[in-house]
Each structure stands twice: as structure tokens, then as C-alpha cells.
Image (cartoon, rainbow, N blue to C red; front, side, top):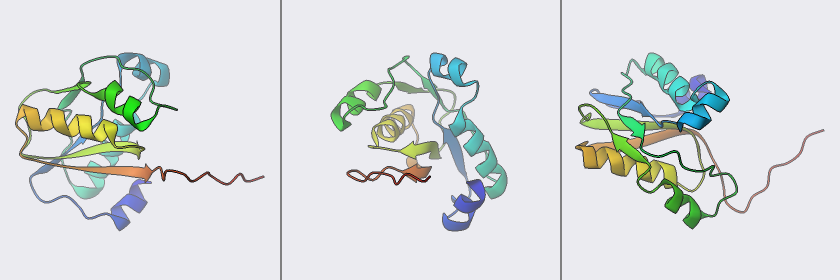
Length: 136
């Protein structure tokens, strides 16, 4: 995925840092890894861009899967907080963009912490109203 992202996405400008979306403690323990952190590390290497863990999960939230757009927004409102010295320009990294609620909440937390500019990259985007095709 990172090779494809490197090929099709514009690299962040000099001075930008990649900020992975943090998981809840429970979700991290369940998975054993944070996919956004792995993506950020690989993209940072490909783009020669630093990674900053400038966000923490301020709550342990609920699973977003199957929740409506408004429910998702409510579940992640206030879920993140900025930590450390805020980067001037942050590019949030997450695996999938569904409704945008997570990225919106993460961006809001970074801006409240003092980040002047926030962007985002994801590996995939869910298109509402479309169903996948089964193979096999």
C-alpha cells in the first residue's frame, strides 16, 4: 500500500510531520499493533518525513464499525488530545476514511494544541451506498 501511496499522492512539504491516529488501549491490546503507526512509519521512510506521535486517545471509545455518520461523530468527539510540542504542519495518517469523523476529531485536537496546518492521508475511502463484489 505504501508503494502505491508514494506513487499517487503528493508528498507533504518540507517541515510537515506525519501523525498516526492512535488506537484505544483495548484495541491496541486486541490487535497487537496500530496500523496507522505502521503506515506512518513506512510513509515517513519513503517520503523522508518525520513521524510524530502528537496525539493520544483521551478516551477508550467504542467500535465505529456499523455506526451511522452522526453516531460516529459523537463517538469520537473529544476522543483525542494533542501531546508534546505541536507540529506547525501535521499530516494525519489513518488506514480507512469512512465518514471522516475520526480525522475531523483528530484534526480538531491538533488545531486546539496549536498546530497551524493539518492535512490527512488514508489508504482507502469507503464510498457510501456501494457494496463490494464477492469473489469466489
